[in-house]
Image (cartoon, rainbow, N blue to C red; front, top):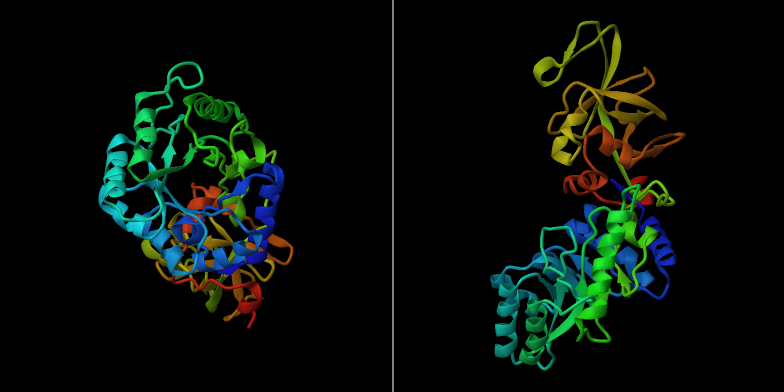
Length: 372
């Protein structure tokens, strides 16, 4: 698997230009850098001087600390009370989405001998539904009761580091629902009272950062666009980042009627050339692409035939394909290209799942490393 780290940086700069250069950038590097290798991704992003990094779990945040990240590391999924002590020791910024989580963190603040308050972020649920406090009528009435609890917690050794929400449909052709979410967020921030002047305020993912604005936000947190997947038909596409390739381990000619793969779901319609590639669903190539997906061999598209196995798949190719040849399953070879969004569509999924589903058995390397 080839990872073009320079393309990640270029995509980040496009986000920065579209969102406004004054806004802080919080790259999301969860799920092992969206499957590309978090060490490699962080090394690529560091020269762009992001404000900090976003992860989904305490374990992911601690891994960033182990590889030397000193910038703020924010955990965006709710953190179990039992995991909060580890998050605090690691200098992470947990997200708080309910009063039970706030109470658990408050107890840590009261018991802590730390010289500085424990930072945390508050998540506002503006429509995603999976986590977060309800915004109430802030901006048009009294703040919700839970907000008073957040403000009071600051007297117990806690620091309100930020307030954020998640957009659920910012990449839709019609962005009205995302605009409504941003409006709810802005109304809350403007009307709640007590939001620190230095608080981090953010609601935009990649699509939101490229397409929409907020009156109150001072940061954005891009994800999938950094890694080469588009975020809307009206947004300039990112530079491709990942290419998935494998070598042909066997090429042979078969007669008409030869059956192929588990279940014998494919039968040669005539004399055919089959090339077995050393990649399968154990590497993250979706099994559903059997008899419907494509690869690029010798600079031209060829079909994947038969069911994909755990370790191999078979292509119907021309006679020019030989054992040892490199085949492309995502990316470009010559004039032929298989964009990640097309592969995802054929698999009935989204680019996120394709990238994060690529297993550790596939080595991650720069294109020049792959050529050695």
